Image (cartoon, rainbow, N blue to C red; front, side):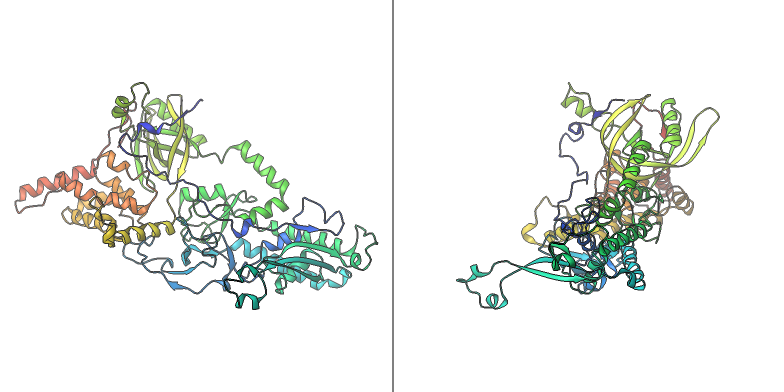
Length: 629
C-alpha cells in the first residue's frame, strides 16, 4: 500500500499551522552521557577486551556529580542529572505557581509548590522546556539505579567475606584532574594579572586493594576518586617494581576482575527486567515516580492509564522532557553487559512488529477526544472490515479523524491540487465494548487514548491507513513557564496591546472556573432527570485540567471548527483558553436563554437545552454514512 505525504497547505488558508507539540528539545549533555574514557595498560587479555566496559567508566555511572561518592538514594532531576538525595539543595516555596495538575481549587496531590534551584543553573540547565528551578514533584528516586547500587554493596560484602583467597590483587591507579591557578593568585588578582589564572593539570595516584572494578568502587566510596577524574590508567604493582617482568594473563588481580565482572553482570541482569513486558528492557526510560520501563511499554501504559503500574502514582511523563527520554545509565549497562541479548530482542521486535503503533487505520467520521468515550454504529462494509481487523490484529485500536473542514476553500485556492480528505490531527481510540448484530452491523464504545498527527496516508480495501506521529502535551514545567510569562505580560502596562486577549490575564484555575461556572448555571436550570442522564452519558466533569476541555467539547453543541481547535494544542492552558470562549459563544448564539417567570417559556427553553445536550450529532464525512448514536 503506497502512502501519500499529508499536505498541510490546504488546512489553514488564512493562518499558520498549529503547533504539533513535537519539536525536539535542545539541551546540554547530561551526566549520563558524559562518561569518560578509560585506558588500561595492565596488559592482560581480559583488561584489553574491547567488549567489556572499563572499570572507571562503569563506576563513574554511579558517582554523584556533587559529592563524588557512589549515589546514596539516587535522586533523578528533570534536567537529566542524578544526585544523592542528601545532596539535594535546600527547598523553597515557588512563587507564582497556580497550575497544579489534577486540581481546580488550588490543592495538589504532589509538591509542585516546593522546589529548588538546580545546581547546574547557568551550566547547561535552564531553557524554554526545562527551567533551572525544579519542582520537587518532577523529581524522584531512581528505583532501578538504587537496586543496582545495592548489588555493588553485596559484591563488596562477598569479597570481604572471602578476602583471603584473593591475596596479591593490588593495582595502582593514576588519574588527572584540572584546576585553576593557586588560591593565593586568585585572591590577589587584578585587571593586570587576570591572565595569570590558567588551568593546571594535576596527577593523582592510589593503590587499589581489590582489583580494578571493586577497587575503583571502594576508592570512590571512600571519597578518594573525584567525579571529574580523567585519563585513568591502571598498572600492576609488579610492573611498577619490575618494568621488565612480563605479566601473565592468569595473575591474581586479573582473575579477581574477571570474577567480579561476571558477578556484577549476573546480579545486575536480575534488576533490568521491564515490569510491563517482563523481558530485558529495550530503550529504557524513567518516569517521574522513579520506575523504569521499555520506551514502548511506557507508551502502552499511557494508552490505558496515567498511573504507574507499580506504585499507582500519576505518571506525568512526557517524552519531550530533557534531551533524551531514554535512561542513559541503564542503556549503557545494557549495551556493555548484554549485547547479544539486546541484539536478539531488537531482531524479535522488528520481526514481530508489535511495537509499530505509528501506522493505524482511520475512521473518517467525527471528532473523538482523549480520555472520553465515543459511541459508534458501524454498518458500512469497509469500516466493518476495518473494525474486525483492529480487533483481530490491531490491539483494538484505530484512529478517529474528521473530514476536511476547509475542503471548499482548499479546492478554490488550489484547483490543480485535490484537497486532503480529512483533517491532519486526530485521536487514537481503543475499543472498550462492541456488539456484533446478526446482519453484520457493529455497535461499539471506544475511548480516546492519545492524539496524533497524520504524516502519510494511503487506501486499503476502501478505508484509509496512515503513518502517524504521537502528539504529547508539554511538561508541567513548561506549563508553569507559559502561565508565568502571560501573567507577567498582562500585568505590565508596556506589554498591553489592544489585540491581546483578556484571557491571558487569568490564571489556569481561573480559566477552568469560567467553564465550571457555566456548567453549574446549566445544571441549576435543568431538571434532575436531565442532569442524571447527562452524567450517565458523559460522566461527571473531570477535575484534571488536562482532560476537562475534551469532556467540555464532547458535551457542548459547538461547531466542529471550534471543537477541533483543541486537538492540535499541546498546552493545557491554551486548551482552556479556547474552552473558556465557548460559554459566551453559546449564549450569544441563543443556545442559553434566561428563564422568565412565564412557565411556558421556561419549559420551551428547558426542552431546547435537553435536545442540544443529549441529541447533539456531527455531520459525518461525505464518504461515510456511519454516525455516532
